[in-house]
Length: 264
Image (cartoon, rainbow, N blue to C red; front, side, top):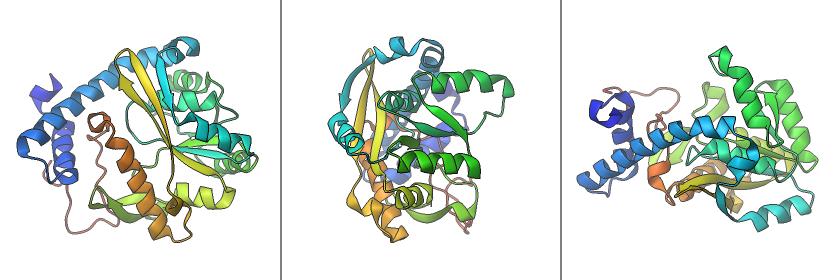
């Protein structure tokens, strides 16, 4: 129904896929856009179950975990672990699974609807995570946890709201504003970085943990941000239809003379 109505997020999906896959034919891009909108509907439909059911029931639907050995090796060495979880598959399931591997601290920004706050807090912490506010105090707690061998998760492909929080880099061949928080936290804590996501498969999910490339730890922020975006790219190529293409990812700061979404 949403696809037939062709709302703004359907149009944004089409634009993003056009920008990200210029080598695809028009029919191929249209087919991918439609599959992406359907995947978003699947995500919305399963959220009630993910948030409300006991964790054991949700965990039983994770049928495979790939790359777990590398994460466990990092944890065993006493090194902190940061999971970089793109908007791919079901990121709520990914965060819940990470918290089962050890002490996990994650940043939390209350939803705009206050009535949802208690429900979301309870849902995201029920597998063991500690939620902290997205302010200086919360960041200090997160840094201490990573330095002491704990874990955290960050959405690396979220466009920062202010200029000071990111720099323009390249993602899928397009310039876009990219957060610097993950790179700064890795530099401050010495944590090991993994890209992680829960791919939707028949009957549940498949977890992926992929070690980050060495360039992500570079002191050169330009090199680090390119590696960050390249890591997200490698994840989304596994199941491109499950990426959140309706999000206006290809935005730059400060706003330039050209806006990819001006006519949408």
